[in-house]
Amino acid sequence: MTDCENSLSSAEATKTIEDESVGNSRMQRTFPSIARLLSKWFMPGSKLSLSWDVFVFSIIWYNSIFTPIRIFIMSIQSTPPALITADVVFDFIFVLDTTLHFFRPYIDGDTGEVITEKKAIQAKYLGSVSFYIDAIACIPILKTLLSPFIKGENMIALSTNFNVLRMCRVLHFPSQFSELKKYLSRKEPVNEPLFRMCIILFFTLLLMCIFGCTYFGWSTAVVDNICPNPDLFKEEILGAEMWVATDFVITDVMDPDVCKSNATVHCDSCPQHLFFMRSIYFLMQTLFTIGYGDSVVPSKSAVEMSLACVFMIFGVFGYGLIIANMTSVLSNLDVVSVRFRHEMDTLSRWLNFRSVPAQLKDRINMHFTYLSRKQHGVLDHIIFDDLPPQLSRDLCELNMDLLTKVPFLSRHYRSDTFLSHVVSAFGRRVYPPGSCIQYQHERNRELIIVKSGKADIFIGGIKDSVGSLLPGDFIGDYQLLFGTSNQVSVSSPEFLEALVLTYDNFEKIMNHPDQRDFAFRSNGGNFRTVDDQGALDTIAHYDE
Image (cartoon, rainbow, N blue to C red):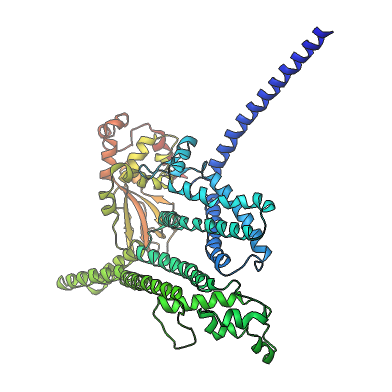
């Protein structure tokens, strides 16, 4: 019987160990899958990643505005329950955001590659300053666990300390603005002075809120309760040495004598909104050196005077910084237009010196005006000449979808290497309104792909156009391959941007050692006698 029981016990123990190992293996499989899922969701630039960053920014903004009010103006007894609940919820969200940073991919600043490896992500985050800021800012979550065991004044002190720790989240603002700048620069160039001005104004308003609450809190530290019972108001408030005691805007809604004479005033309520607004109002007048001669009272105690002096010193530098940056913003708003007008004046003098006819002069001016409006006067060849070959090739390959619509250049017949050479050989042209893109019976051998705008097709003897070329359409591929003359005339009734492959560039590609199979040169520089499926599809395309 004992042997049987022992065998059963060992079997149960073995089963338990197996179950635990199965459970552990499942957890090990589940955790990497969750990590991969988070990495996929929070890729840099994804909608979820951007939405989450905006949400976290809003939480930090809330903390930076309401936390100083909670510390210096509101008491625990007068704090609305909704704000206390919001603090707890946002503490949990911030802990979640800190956890997500261990799985969120990032863009390497040196290579520009997206790093998705978990170990690299965690090593970078643990070695950054943001990790220590997040660790400190997550400490207030402990209040939820400690609140059942702490009461009275200890709870007040604990809440104040936790509120101070929440203010550490403000240190994330510089990195968040840096990420915002990177995101905006991916779409279009960022106006540096204007962006810097927005940041300065944001931090100016933020610091005014923080300093205003600090000024009120330190000034009223001489009294135990800023909102005492009406019977004690005169003794505790009006008798104290602080600016609140002589500010009639505040005292008139707290003084019992005023309440008796004015039925619209309720002295039982604590005018916390007035405390905040009057503090901000005083600080704004101090920082911006504005004096209206109204009832904003000067500092009374030594603490208030010291704080006012500090604010004035910071205000001088802040005011100077705003003015200097505003000057930079205004001077850079029109810098491109000024440069364009200067270049156009030089061009106009040259055209007058060469006695260019007025109609041709207008067309030239129209052309450069279009270039200035569309691409700020920067020509494509200048950009491509300054780029490394690989970047230049990658930039050209953005037009690959337009290129592969041409039958001869279809991906079914051409390798990626060949198409890369061809797309790099395309040039960009801008045709002003009224330009003739090609003449009928002319032998120019150019492949033209419309990128934007519209072109009209004409046949000799017919006044009206017989068709149109829209973005994505092409013409000239047959003539480029077989060396025939143009069958139609093409003109542009409006500005038209086109990608053009000239015969000279095409010949260089076909004579490249990699394209020796085409035997282009030995066949007279055309495909008339070459059995190439792409050339045959070109013929079939025009036969249709």
